Image (spheres, rainbow, N blue to C red):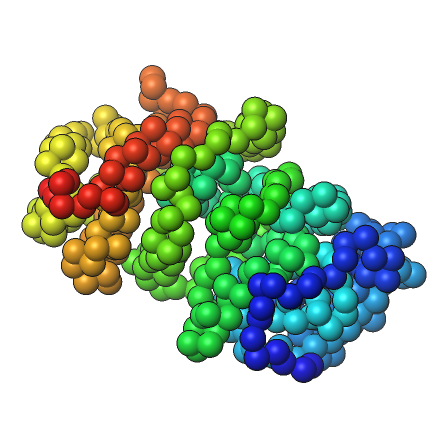
Length: 411
């Protein structure tokens, strides 16, 4: 497949209304069994619609009986490393496929795509007939996706005024102009040899003034992160997220209109999912990690966190396990202060994110205890996440103030 040296954001994308254009489905590498199951789901999702399925598998299986499904293989123009999420290389390759096949809209599906139901595939494709970006709202267990629930969702909601529940979704639907925007962003990474870098589609849509929506996608199998420990996972995800927020500061610091009431009502309705934990959580290792870090990392934390936050952490370190609760306002302030320290390079970024891990574990322990159903103050997991996001929104003025005048707020 021919390569393109530069992605121009001013190029003319395909016309969504063009009758010649077909929906493109771009797949990540899948096992033969997973690819066959994905093709069967696509055939069921689009029985009467021309669909072109692009796979990097050089020997794809025989297509299921579906007159409107076409299959093509491609060699990625930009090497795409095996990953548990979509990466910069995936976005760049997909845009080039859309250019090559004159596609006006695309479904980009990540690892384990065979677990997406036909109804979810159809809903994503239908959504981008009226918006630029559609993200799935997965139905996950109360103990799954906690990095997303603790950091990505509440911070994205507060800073970019969108209720997209999974800002780092591993499946997306988008128009040609959204693909162009993502490819331009991705090319900055791939040109530096960082094809595995993360790209943040929701934030890109927000700063571009593009329309976006969220559709229910049901349950989905999630590929395990390719990291040996939580420190490495947080270093990649939180580090990339903080860097993206830093790059977009001129946008999120401006006053934004609140998201429409209709969108808020939809988001609340879309959060239905498992609400009961199957058994009492084992939070003692997390608490041990936090208490050990409190004794050994206090000096580092004092370079990042203001006195009130340090006092809150001291109180937490003295609580018995059953009473361990991290206030939502404290966690929001911790995330914002670490974001600021990342921007200001208060200390080495690797060490900074390493010092962040035990604080995240303390939040997880608190969240699991609060939502386990065993305590008098128990709440449903999703209700707690929504309350946490509201705390991030309420504390946004603090972040803006410290961002603009950091010297006035030194810890």
